[in-house]
Image 1 (cartoon, rainbow over the protein chains, first blue to last red):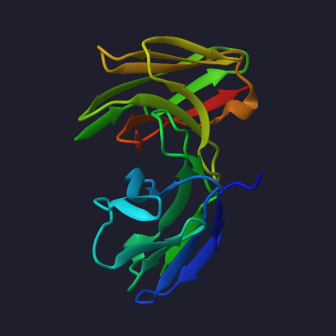
Image 2: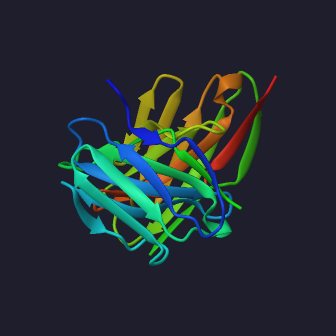
Length: 115
Length: 108
């Protein structure tokens, strides 16, 4: 079975540019998470969706960040305009929501550098 | 709020045993996960505890005490490939909140 698929794997962009990160969750999973990982702050939850509906976006840093999930097999995380402090690894993860103890499975991550 | 504490670094010798402790104070609790993350890679699932006690899975075991807000991950018969970061995560409302991770270095 294919795991969580993210693209791009690596992106280097200039400050002020728009960045779009993409994610395809594991088929059959109904929960999707976007996490950000940095050395300073560790792994932080940005937003999570259940059945394509955003349930909790309290971790989204500011209005420059937005996330969508138009269908069960695709999600995007957009940063506009990007800033150097947005440089991080962005992980998408998915799970099956239904009972406690659902393991979440991570994609390989998108390594973002904003210069 | 969520407060999850674990040591920053640990070093051990190949073949030895290492115990990584995790203490937590969180607004809710459904269970506790341990993930392994090798440098440059995604976190991968190791274990899950929802009831007090020890869960054993091969060379890895995980323990939970809900009343004490405490868990540990025990790695036995250490191998070089076990050098990685180990992340403690508390599940609440089907979300996971992660600790900062413990970097384990295994030396020959």
